Length: 219
Ligand SMILES: Nc1ncnc2c1ncn2[C@@H]1O[C@H](COP(=O)(O)OP(=O)(O)OP(=O)(O)O)[C@@H](O)[C@H]1O
Ligand SMILES: [Mg+2]
Image (cartoon, rainbow, N blue to C red):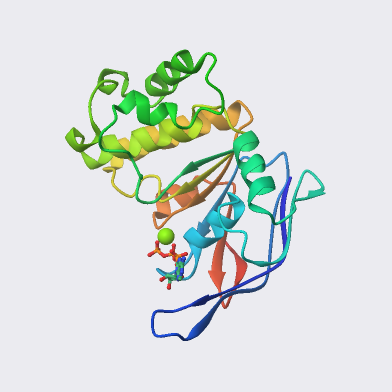
């Protein structure tokens, strides 16, 4: 169970102004839920919210608890939380250009033992095993996005946080990725998906929108 209670966060903009992103924001995802979609306008804080859930941003007010235990807001305990349970599909993929696809996916492995078998399995799951030895610079946007998804799932995380995971994909490929996500959900992996796609949002169990610094329900 993931829970954010009374989350608050402000950012300092380039011109020095302070802008509130979140105020008194609550988020709950019970252990039995398969997926939640997070919607909101550009700049409303969706990626920031995922970074907080991932433990990558510890500069926030309020409480973050997982399975009923409050997570200390220190970079080291948040890193431990992330390593143990969280897979992240970042919005910009963040692939290392001088490493192969397989080496990029291996970065998502929490441990070295058995890593190559896990990498092969993840590449096959997302349908890009034939690209294992390519460099990211030689990939299409959709292929790069699948590498980012493989890197997120390679350690078989409890929770996948996906930031616009189908943003670069055509409808057919988006459908394939949604199928993959649903298969992983059948296996118990939970998904929090930031998306602008109505199709993706409709396939999630619940939809929330960032509005006036909080998360509100969407039909
Ligand atoms: N580290 C940071 N320091 C300062 N400002 C930041 C930082 N990260 C994000 N911001 C700002 O916070 C706001 C929210 O950014 P965020 O990336 O979370 O939005 P978003 O909802 O994901 O937008 P998009 O739909 O365009 O991806 C933006 O105005 C952005 O410029
Ligand atoms: Mg974003």
